[in-house]
Length: 156
Image 1 (tube, rainbow, N blue to C red):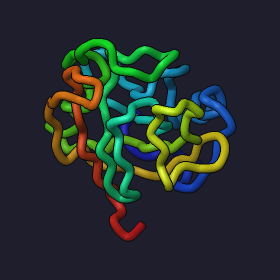
Image 2 (cartoon, rainbow, N blue to C red; image 1 turned 180 degrees about the horizontal axis):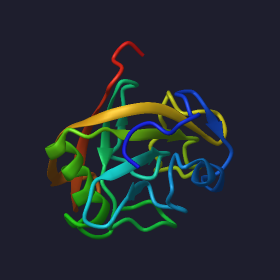
Image 3 (cartoon, rainbow, N blue to C red; image 1 turned 60 degrees about the vertical axis):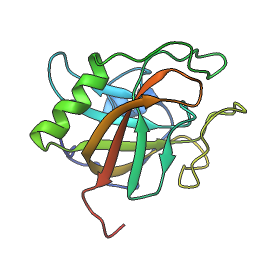
Image 4 (cartoon, rainbow, N blue to C red; image 1 turned 30 degrees about the horizontal axis):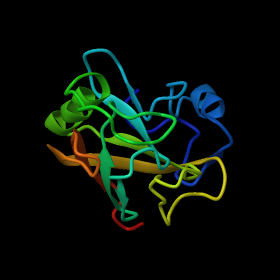
């Protein structure tokens, strides 16, 4: 489902992906982008998985998915414009928002550490528009996709 979830408000806290899944906030069991086949993204989780992410509270420079080694956090291959990455571009093309969830930053040395992340679990932080996207060479030397997410409610 694109947009708000009945009964869920920005600031609501979740202890796990399973809890978010049950409430419909982020229906994927572990991926950072929840999307439906051949359509737009529903939600994204910002939790320190990609070192290239930048969190500016109402604006987020979000890194697409793929090509990252889960154990080290290093980008080891180019990302592809497919699946969740493609879905986020559809959000931009259609002007559809995506739900943003911030999670506690991963405890890896190379993880992105957001000053706006919760101290535990996950927090739903509202709807954001995909204002722009592009590809570039990331810190580890591989092509990554970047998404400029801007809060629908800029009064945050």
